[in-house]
Image 1 (cartoon, rainbow, N blue to C red):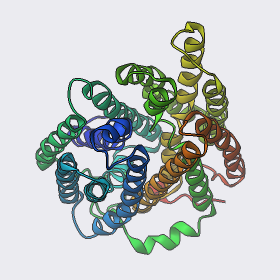
Image 2: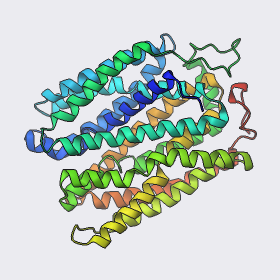
Image 3: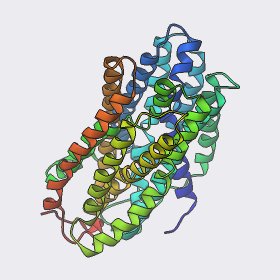
Image 4: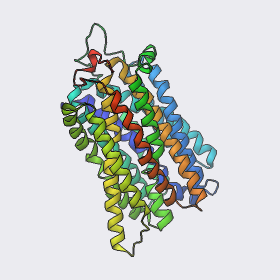
Length: 420
C-alpha cells in the first residue's frame, strides 16, 4: 500500500475531523462552571446540532465539488472551521456558542466525504480495507486527541485552551493544503471518468436502484443511532457518575479506546482474507465484531465501579476495551464494502450520503443519551447500557444484507460490478 504526500494530507484532515468531534463534549461540566448561563445539557445539545449541521453541509459540499477542485474546497472549509473554533472562545451564552459551532460545522462537513472519495480512488480493491483501516486509525487517534487536549488542559488552563490549539492547527493545515496534489485514479478508464468527476447528482438514480446500497445505508444509520454517543461522553460518564478527576477520566478513556487504533487495520486484513474465501466475507466479520462488541460493552457498563475496588476497575477496563476494539471495525469495513460494489464515479456521492447519515445518527444518539440522562436523575450509566443493548439488537439489520451481497467483488468496481 503506497503512501504519498496526498495520502498524508488526507490523513491529517481525517485526524482533525476526529478531534473536532470531541473538543466540547468532555468540557461540558467545565463550561457550565465557567459560564452560568450555559448548562451541561446545553453543551450536549450544541454538540448534537454541530453533528447535524455537519451532516447536512456534507451534501452541500458534495454538490460544490462537482464544479470546483477538491483542493480549493478543502482549503476553504478548513479555514472556515478553524476560524469559528477560534471565535468560540469568546462565547458568553448558549446562543453565541450555538452560532459559532454551527458555522464551524459547515466547514467540518466537507472533510470526510471528500477525503473518503480521494482514498477510494488511490487504492486497488484488494488494498482498500487496509487504506480505510489506516484512515480509521488516524480518525480514532484524532478523536482521542480531542479528549486528551480537553482532559489534561482544563486543569492548569481554562476551557478555551483546547479550542485555541485546534484552531491554530486548522490554520496551519490550510497552509499545508496549498501543496496538496489531487490524485488521479489509474484504475479508471480515462475515456469515461476523469480525475475531476468526484460528485454527480445525476448518479443518485443509479445509487438508489441498487437495493444493497439502500439496505446498508439503513443499517449504517441505525447503528450510529445506537452507539454514536458512547465514546463522545465517556469521560462525562466517569466524571459525573463516579466523580473521577478530568485527567483520570481521560486516562481511562485512552486505555479503553486505544484498542480502536489497530482495530480497523486488524479486522480490515481479516475481512480481506474472508472476502477471498466466501461471499459476504467483510459483512460476516462486521457482524461478528458488532455482536461481540455490544455484549462486552453492555456487561462492562452494567458494572458499578469504584476507585476503592481495584478488581472491579480492571474488569470494567478489560470488558470495555475489548468491546470498543470490536466496534471500531464498523466504519472501515462498511466503507470498503461500498467501494467494492460501486463504480468510482458513484463513490464520493455515496460517501457524502453515508457521512451525512452517520452524523445524523450520532446526533440522534446524543439526543437519546440526553433524554436518558435527564430521565435517570442526571446519570449517564443507564443510558449507556440502553444504547449498547440497542446496538446488539440493531446488528440484526446486517443479516439480510448477506443475501444481497454481490458476487465477484474482487473485480474492480471501476468496471461496474452488478449486484444480484
